[in-house]
Image (cartoon, rainbow over all chains, first blue to last red; front, side, top):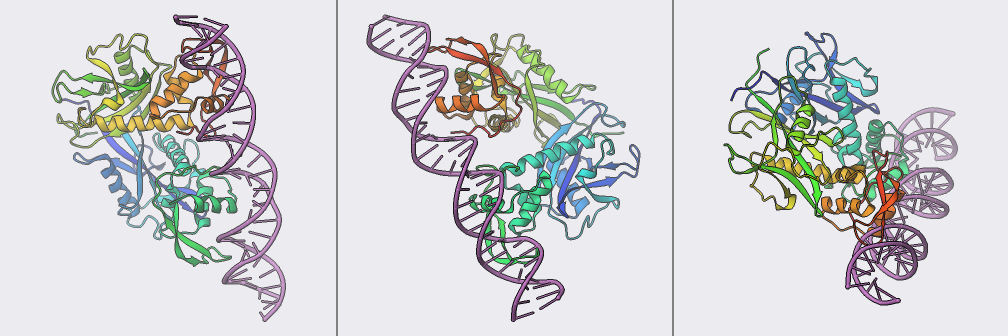
Length: 225
Length: 225
DNA sequence: TCTCCTTGTCGTCACTATGACGATAAGACC
DNA sequence: GGTCTTATCGTCATAGTGACGACAAGGAGA
């Protein structure tokens, strides 16, 4: 079949929680168009590559996370005819949730990759329609924290309840009551399971460590405050 | 720029509720591949067309609904390299929710379009990966009924509470208590607004007519029983 | 060691929303 | 007028939540 000339790409919204803030991995573009502007990491889909394969490959390239365990989900596809000045490029956006990385952007082939607070991304500062993509992805993440146990994707394998609460507070941007949060999380079946040991890394009284449970949805959902 | 050969299409999952059943508009394919099989309506994106524009155009072609008021949303994009035997075709799936049409498939250019109960679509009976697309779209619709007032998209402009309940029951496949449903719907602010008149079209005691309210999300959500 | 500070964890209480279900209302049909 | 059907209101027990008090258990410093 004959096809119109068209490029197919994926863009990644890689989110993490660092220092109590929701941060996104952005790249300073070295070439036109939008040279010098911040942009989402991304690239073209190779001829025999599935969309998610492309996304995982790029995730590994940018973060060094060979990423079977990393949560990655498709958000939406952006195809406005004029969204890329170089020609018709349709982009499938993916959302990745990663824990606070021990070696930030290790193995990145883009030396200009940085973690930026999502709240510090000014309107119009991103290349292409990446502002919109970022906003959609963050909104997706916020919504999913309500009814899925996905917040654990931001945490290390073992975490405390207050670390988990920190994720919710960072993503939602609202403080939560520690006591009610503790009750909610521990009473929701299979959300988290106690490991049996404790840690004092958060200061104060030693806290129990948990790992994620087997639940895939939360009934009833978490509430934003 | 040079691009790999690639086709970009949209496929539509057009859902309605008829006779208390959730139904999907399917087309009997007249040409290979998958000749004679049921498939979702769809087509290629034109060079200067936005993705949603393509979807709305096809919706109008299939249903005759010139569709500003019709709910249409993107579901996901499917791009497995081998999903179309003719070559690499990436498809953006859209979900459309339409009311029970007075003139079913009027104006369709595909004489072979039919409404099929979603429960009657057998595994493996659809062309391409359309079974998967349908399943994802139906799941999206089910989820959205919980936290959005979207069920009204299946209803005529003025509807009764029990007609709205019929939508929930058809989409979720579970019976709901009429009294609790009535309480829930009428007490959720801005979900529906009374029109002031009544109808007896459902039989029994005359029922108040409502139209959709201004709410965009439901707090707390509807529950599936 | 004692005290204070910090965070974790348990408990209480009032209120809201829900599921189950009884009871009545208001038309159509005979 | 009966009877059937659906609409609509009400009651009650219970689960879940938000607000917040109280105590536990470690570290830091006097």
